[in-house]
Length: 163
Image 1 (cartoon, helix red, strand yellow):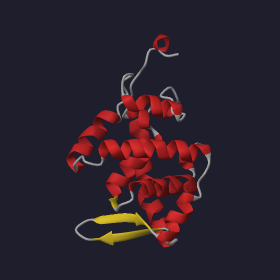
Image 2 (image 1 turned 180 degrees about the vertical axis):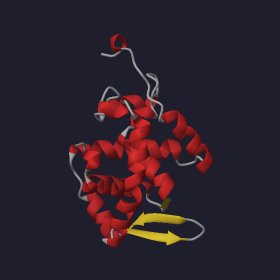
Image 3 (image 1 turned 30 degrees about the vertical axis):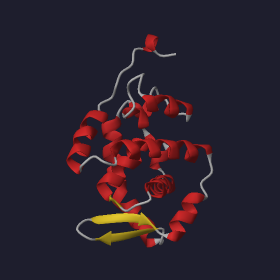
Image 4 (image 1 turned 90 degrees about the vertical axis):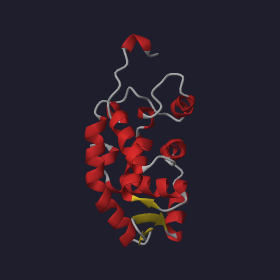
């Protein structure tokens, strides 16, 4: 069992994404942000990528098993997304609005809960969320989906090239 298999873990990550975003987000974009923040080195692949160092210092390592099958992991994450968002809405931690498209944002209570996450992983994840949102916020839905096709292809690094 991995942490991604735990409902509360996934829901906590969604709260953190919404907290960092600070604005309503549709489910598709929220799911992409949440997944890539958990696997941010899929975005910052190049050794000379300026975000790579910050992510490595935050504890992310592209040699972990999670980077071996990103497309499968993303598909599984998407299966949980609707249920997890529904549970957060039902508990009053997330509001849903339908004005042209369905969007989600934190309620006041959701923001309080998200602010209470102080574990080292939460801090690392927030670092990744900030980078992911900064890099992807301006992309249209079509460009985001095109990028996702590239980012979900695993990158194989030769063992002798990595410390």
